[in-house]
Image 1 (cartoon, rainbow, N blue to C red):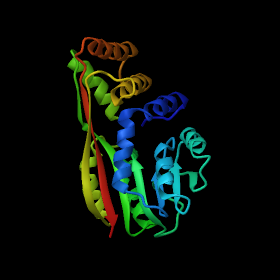
Image 2 (image 1 turned 30 degrees about the vertical axis):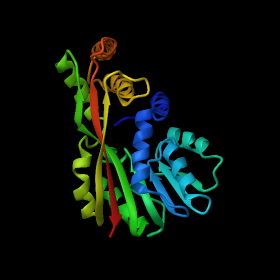
Image 3 (image 1 turned 135 degrees about the horizontal axis):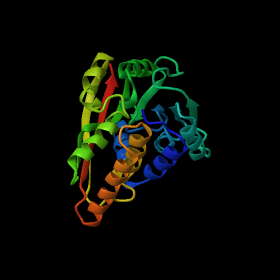
Image 4 (image 1 turned 90 degrees about the horizontal axis):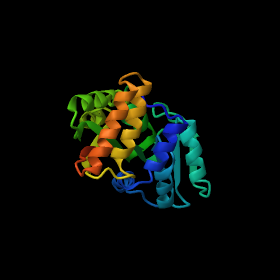
Length: 258
């Protein structure tokens, strides 16, 4: 699993404010369609960017609860929403939500469930805290859709196989509809959001992944440091030559509690 130490948190804080991640947040926000006065939860709120947007949407008569297990991320979230009175930030996990049965109008989780060893536990827990007809939006990456060009495909395969191990399930979106139905939800929609980068943008998903993947592969002993560094340098060279290409698809799954 990816560890959210200070260095990783700093990388994510910068990347999450870029265009790719802004578009991803917007897709989940639009799918949930928050309404003034609603009570919502942001499961795995991270640095609080989406939590704040939800709080502004529900207004002072509504409430948003942000929950996350990472103390580093929670500190960023607390700082980001300190001027809002309708947000509560708490430490916790998706498996155990400290809320009453049927107490929420909606729940949202962005790239969290792919890290859970047994997402069905958290789906049942989310079902519990939602009112009947309550909405749930889950946004997760399907890493099986990753296509990334390299002149050294074998090295690229080693790097990608290492990265697959940072999540509990690298193809979770393919399983979510079935898991949601088993947990008592009705599927409303499944929408793909595909990212394509041919220029290695500084604020893009590809650049963030290169930083995280190098650190993850080396620190976990999956790939030697010199090989991981050569991989990064090759991608930078390809971008300079106009030959960079990476694509990855994120899925936004919307459901309602029956």
